[in-house]
Length: 231
Figure 1: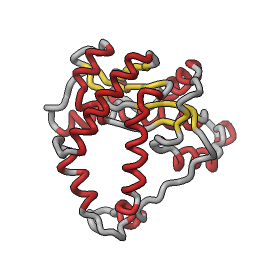
Figure 2: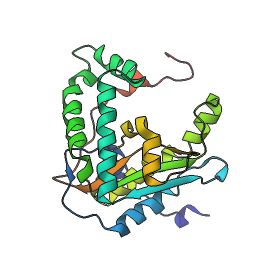
Figure 3: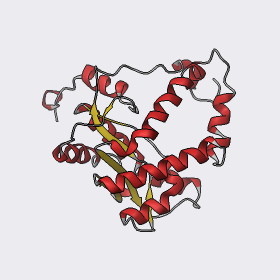
Figure 4: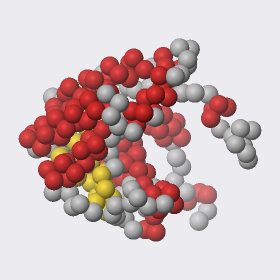
């Protein structure tokens, strides 16, 4: 195929979506209904993500029923309590690490805003128009790293693609995982088979307010090594 036949990409638009897609919490429009057609469009885009050995074992549970959303939100809040109280493994790793950052560290400076937005979502989660739970067939938490990476690599890219597709349609979402502390209970609630792994929970709504901006991140030089770690 000649270069003339390749459809040109609008790099500015592509980069804008990539750099402004993030977890939105306080700017989710909790009152405006999200059309089912838009959710289906975004999901169809997500199905183009990489999938190990072309297995395509991803599954997506879309939740719009009020009672189900209320129960999920209740479990989410219970899980948040366990997390804050230090009763989860992540409490002892990620949270501890964040507390050890210096006051001048960018991540420490953003911590208060993160806690505020997280609290808002926890309080209002049941009000979001749509929840989407990406899943993948099989259980693999006790397998070797190769197997785990391969399996997660067949659902997490699709989940990120879904967030990008939603963002391109002026919809906002947030990547959350707290509900997984009660994965079995939520599986029972939604009829998800026991041999299926939930990967995330995306609350989805229209974006309120103006456009989103690129996030403040650590400098590229601090997180990138060439040929050898630390170089």
